[in-house]
Amino acid sequence: MNSLSNGGSAAARQFPEGFLWGTGTSSYQIEGAVSADGRGPSIWDVFAHAPGNTFHGDTGDVACDSYNRLEDDVAIIRELGVGAYRFSVSWPRVLPSGSGTVNQAGLDYYRRLCERLLEHGIQPVVTVYHWDLPQALEETGGWANRDTAYRMGELAQVLGTALGDQVRMWITINEPLQTVHQGYRAGTHAPGKRDDALAAAATHHIMLAHGLATQALRACTPAGTRIGPTMDTQPYIALDSASEAVADILDADFNRVYLDPVLRGSYPDAARTGFRPPDELIQDGDLEITATPIDFLGVNYYRPHHVRSGDWEDLRLGERRIGGFPGFVQYMAPDLPRTVMEWGIVPESLRDLLLRLHRESGGLPLYITENGCAADDYISPAGTIDDHERVGYIHGHLGAALEAIAAGVNVGGYFHWSLMDNFEWAEGYRRRFGLFYVDFESGRRVAKRSAHFYAQVARSGELPPLQDVVPSGERLPDVPATPAAV
Ligand code: NOJ
Image (cartoon, rainbow, N blue to C red; front, top):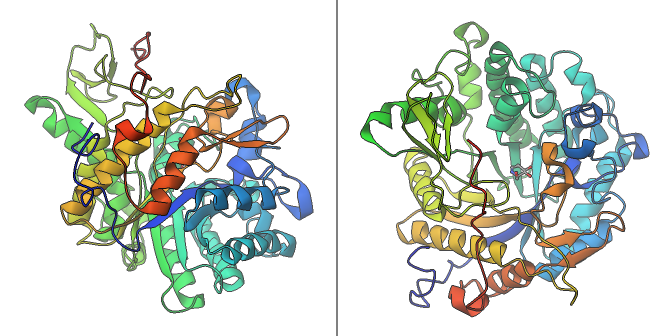
């Protein structure tokens, strides 16, 4: 709940003129067609096919079959009435071996997509790297190998040259924290490594890749093209004064190692070994490259983390240990509303994050490049998908964005994650994030109630009072009967 949930003046509920409404997806999560037209394998093809890595062994082999359903996808984006569509390029579709020979058929697919979007007045917003590294580059060390950063610079140059006349807004990297943490530290995402030294090396190389891609795009795209990275800065909120210092270190480990090289040209001293890239990997000039000027900062926001003191030997409901900090726990209040991902729903923490990033970036334009929730969506006997939870979630977070704007933050746009249900990485197809429901067997896309709601907001630029969109008496958002696992 925030001040705009059920009230606020019409003026306070109005988004600024020119605010960019959008929605997003990423290549491996939607495209399928993994062997079509010369595409090479990615680390996600390999990871998803290895037993035990994804829920029920789900893979992106078919996904939403977007490669073959380009027209269907453009049609549903049009239905939303949004001004922009964020998608990512599958690196191995364009450079099947990661580098060198370009696969023209792959590039043609993205040119066609941009063309169709532009015909309908929808701006393509392209993410260069959204996690599907060519397997060929993994075989030479993946992100732990410095050369991969240069290969991403090469990819950006190929894309900028081929699509630069169509694309005015580029996102270099998506959530480097997840590439590093889940891919190299926790092993829960491709390439499934569990090695702190590799993770620290990957941190530097992916930030270097961001800088090199920014420079490459800048050099081959028309003046006025906007370029920036997308970060998932995760707020760590201390619930007692003893935890403040711990929250600060976690912020350095998980957030500032990605923000600072871009915004300050340094890595934070407060980050621990295994998080902060070791000095011997940082060559002269690297931090000037990571800090190449950007035009905006992309912000992916889903949830905060609450930290408090707590007994490791006697964990209570909603508490889990924080590695390396005996006596401190990550906490989730049992009555905190949460999504089916067990992520707490705290819209005001988006507002605070926007305020923080505004301060730290010296007032750079911020775009909310992802925000959304998974819910237990289903088609009712009446043929409707009544995802009140998602409507409530969007409403709360847009209200938080409005509060940040009112406080002077330059928020340029909002991209709901996601256009449609898709392959949710290690969670497979069981976690539905879409505004459109996808029947994965037939490929049919069906608008959920949230799609209608979002279309109304995007077309009018105004956030209606919640009671006008979710009839009273309907339950939202759900507090599960079984509290979060400890
Ligand atoms: C972040 C990622 O960028 C996206 O790929 C993912 O599906 C969403 N978060 C939801 O987890």
